[in-house]
Length: 210
Image 1 (cartoon, rainbow, N blue to C red):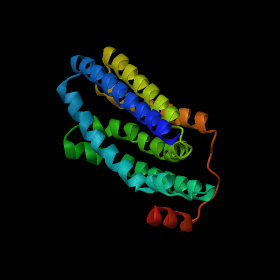
Image 2: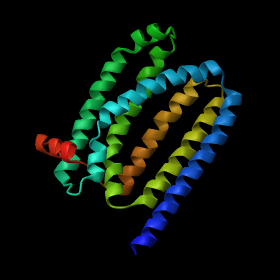
Image 3: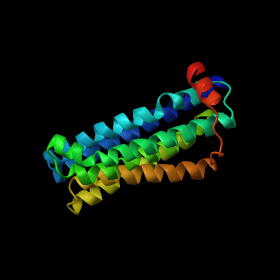
């Protein structure tokens, strides 16, 4: 059974990667004809901020939940609340820093874009534990389905907004809508909500052992 399961999981992952690369390639070609290089440049600045924010929120706790053998409900709940609080603090900090960031890059539009796209940091923190639970339950097919559906929604959103001349907002809103859509799918698939529980020992155990 194990070789069959391994072969099936590898096929699922290969299908996911291939489909996502194809959809992303087609989307990029279409957007390149509808958006300007300057708009892509502005979005690249935002992408760096969001990527750093997500790295700080995760802080390897997600990996610990997946690779650690003994994970309990208290661990899931503790990691969720820690990530969620950190993401909120980051969001507030970035919201306050939006105008200084815009001034630093000499791009006034960033003052409006930063508070919107940084919502994805909070949404990502909300969905991280949900993803970990699916992986621990070996629901690889469900994860792949959600990722493919999400990238299709993201691509269609960006193309539609770009068609209506939304400019860089097409790239920003596609991110927010995608993360929101993913979070809804994750909650629906898991039927899981964290308990009002936090324990430092669970965090330390998950981080240092995992």
